[in-house]
Length: 404
Ligand SMILES: [Zn+2]
Ligand SMILES: [Zn+2]
Image (cartoon, rainbow, N blue to C red; front, top):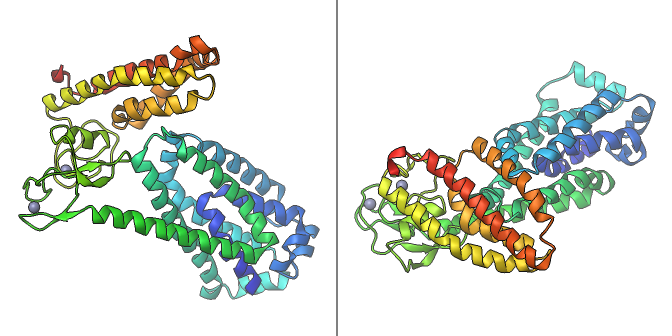
């Protein structure tokens, strides 16, 4: 086992924490077509690579990696598909990272390969295992940081997650290039990124924990924005207000009557403020057992509050819409966050995809007129109204019919 190979393996953890197939494809391409740059990994690499492609750099494997990399990039561009792949990709990434590492070690000189196959044991498997674990650890760290944005903005109404996804594509694409050209720079950069992510996660956790207070009756730690203790149902003196992103603030809520509805708008339990995990209208709180929207009075009041926001949102989005071209993006983000998100968060993903695409096709024609200054003033309010009507009726249909 050569030390330089281990450096490559360690450096590959960074890009593989973001994407599985993009770094594998770039690594295999460089091994195959620019062998002069990879020769530092192993003395014999350059000659082996140019003489005969190994299984890792063969035409077939380049084709497969290339196709999977293209699919991977496409799949991470939709919030719905991203959510689907988040469930599986934390296991795929370490596996592909280990395959890539084995692809590189298999390209080293023949003696080494023979030795490895004859004495294949724990010592050879150890670096591969470490890389797999490293990718899994860094991938978990990444999910934690992304989770902060996902909790606050599940359907990516602000577009922040989309931007992040493009940045990660760049990282997964150029990371292996950087690693092969300047291995030490890559290792240092990776250390900095991992350190920043650990810090960001620690801070987010500390903030959430700091907002918790001990229940006056039973002493359990409860969220600052909770209305009641999840364990003993003792009401809190005054629940704390929620931030725009749904976190508990330090000051008490100005409107205790409306507070349970505000918690539900941020996808938190109206009683104990625990976050709801599922995209479903009827679900029970994992901490206190509260059955969401089981009370028809609460459900109708939630919809009524939502309806009351509609006129204001229409006026504000008309103002955005009057600004040709530039007004479109902030206007759309605004009505989505203010009007659509509190309903869409509870609509199951399969249903939401269908609704999203049917609306999108209709809007394609509307957007073509937004550049006209006066006609443009109507485009965003029409988009807001159509979206609201569609998601409201889907939401209503999923509540029990008796709530009418
Ligand atoms: Zn209690
Ligand atoms: Zn609860």
